[in-house]
Length: 216
Image 1 (cartoon, one colour):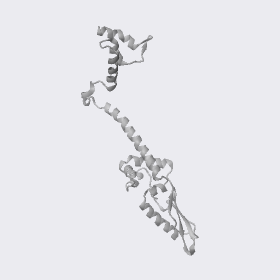
Image 2: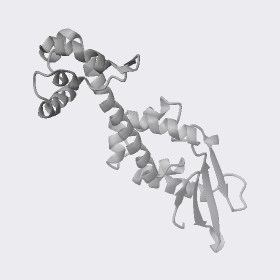
Image 3: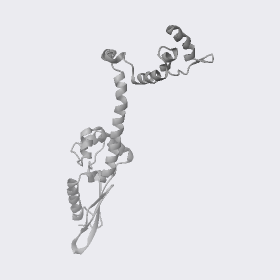
Image 4: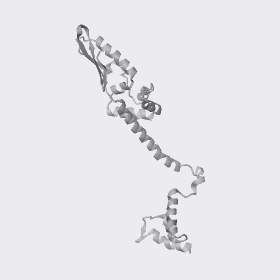
């Protein structure tokens, strides 16, 4: 038998027959379409144990179960899922096909990633997609954490509720260097520009006399 080749949707080999002749054998399995692969990759990326095993170069036994929950199966569910062809003159499944199926089983046992490739996704591409999904999930969690912290009940935040925030502290620091303490300008500067205009005058300029009166 010539070297077995496994590609998207097709496994093939050339098998020696009687009389010195050789025959071409193909075992075909439908590839997942783009929507199915997107669903499969989402499911694999969401399962941390399976995902990290794949990154470690292993195809864990649980992988098939993870895909099954998404309505998918890497393995053919029935004999009719496979298309078997041999160039020999026999009509029924022949010994050449049996030889290739046996070699295919051994190859999948040695490298389970070949089954993924047979379904249309080679190892490198699969891991790139899983890596991108993992990064996107980590970014979403990082963005959600500050919001979640701000939604804590007030009773859990009393220790820092009345402290000034980093932005306010930095504003005060800059203004302390540029404004004399005890002036109306120093009092209103940390507020920044409000963008509110009343009868042609900014809100800050309208508040200025009130601050001056308080300071005086």
